[in-house]
Amino acid sequence: MLALLGTSSAVALAGCGGDGGNGDDDDGSTPATLSDEVADEYERATAINGERRDPDSLSTKDAVNYQDQPQDGKQCSGCAYYIPDKNGDGIGACALVEGNIEPSGYCVSYVAYEDGDTAQAVDVPADARCAVCDMKVANFPEWNAQAVHADDTREFFCTSGCATTYYAATDDFAETDADIAGLWVRDFETRDLVDGTSAVYALETDSDRVDDPMRLNPAPFATRADAVAYVDEVDYLTEEDIVELSAFDRDQASQYRGKFLE
Ligand code: SF4
Image (tube, rainbow, N blue to C red; front, side):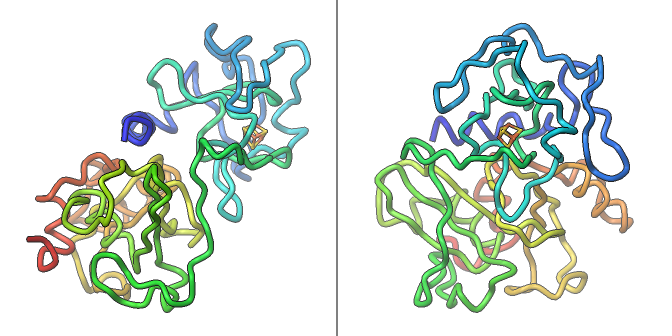
């Protein structure tokens, strides 16, 4: 659980731009600027695949089409060249690309890290049942979620509401005592499967607003900007209703799946 909590604890600050901000363009690309310099601890840091960052031989963000959102479920936090956050601002760096790098970012140089130390999402089996509500998960391709434990026990969920309930009350539903090693949810905007430990969640309370399975779910977003846009559309939600995964305790989960909690 340590790795999971370590990632999620940084989520609230993701998008704040780290060492001066990233200065996104309107088209979603993020050009390198002087204010995009990394903090000293990243200058020659080591990526998760062991590759050392050489500040004199990096690609520009433009050259690799860097964007601050995932693409097709791929994002920097799962890339072999990613250098995870070292100073608590939620932003990391990269062994190939200059500047501050969002864990939810992506570029054309992406290579999935498959050492086995980093958990990966998998395709939903046709017969998988939701570990919380028992619905058939494959019936909800735009809403499903999944989690894997450190002993490789994997569970699937119909929706983010069931996934966050599982996270909040794991002992109620899990068939293993092993810690959760990874969790993925569908981004509300793109429907891509994204890292649920670095996502943020808009705490939707109106079951009529979204035509979603189970009728009420927290809305996951890979980027805080999309979550802010979501809450800005209505009067009854504010930015205080945007939380990270670690905010889901039994009380929070009961708002969405109370009838499944003991
Ligand atoms: S996807 Fe690109 S920017 Fe992100 S960590 Fe990998 S190589 Fe670096």
